[in-house]
Image (cartoon, rainbow, N blue to C red; front, side, top):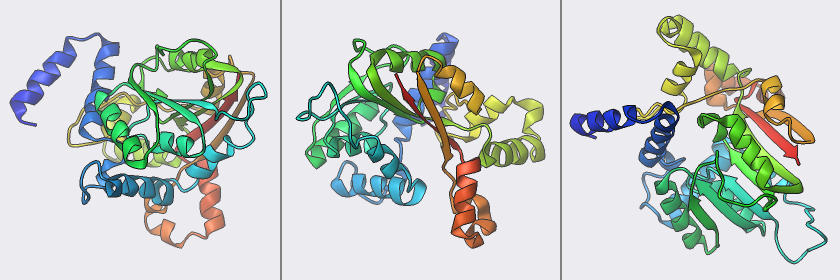
Length: 293
């Protein structure tokens, strides 16, 4: 983007309310850098090979635990004794549609909503390439355009910590879930190695950024970094804060995961697998929340 265009775009954002400015930055970020697209640049955009590369990276390299985690919650579901229809699944913030496609493959009737029109375009292409159907909409997770009790499962992975009113977003998940339905959510973990060592120690203390910036500003600058420099809102939570966010739900379980050996540099290459897995489950970057209405 040329400097003149970027300046004009920045001025437009500044005219918005603080809440809308944050949301506009999120749109800019994931329009310029669709989720996972950096690993598929050698393939033709929108081709099967392009989407295969994104999926392979997500489930084989970045987060191998993810596929089993989502599929576990698909097993043995029931809805008022009906067995012929798949569960009604809503994903809030689906990006390029990688995870939503897994629910469709498992037999779910899937709906997705995303703040970024570009994400909707890409996900529609993905579903067409693989021959699955999905209802994909542009919309805001803080105000879902669905009636209450509409879905069996609501899923939102790495999204609600980018929206200004995270609590309002969680309330919306609760509202559109049927009684007995489950929410599957990931939020960033403020107790993680990445937060304290990668961000606060390395960036904040050793590079002196805590003198000029708040922890949230440091996350905004580096967690979702791209050349576009949209600097979207980024938040991280403790377990106690998550329990408060999900206090409307009757059963809330919190797990920790997500660590790569590359993040641990040379130590990561020699750590025995049991120790590495313990670190991931104790100090990983993701708080993985399952909550029942």
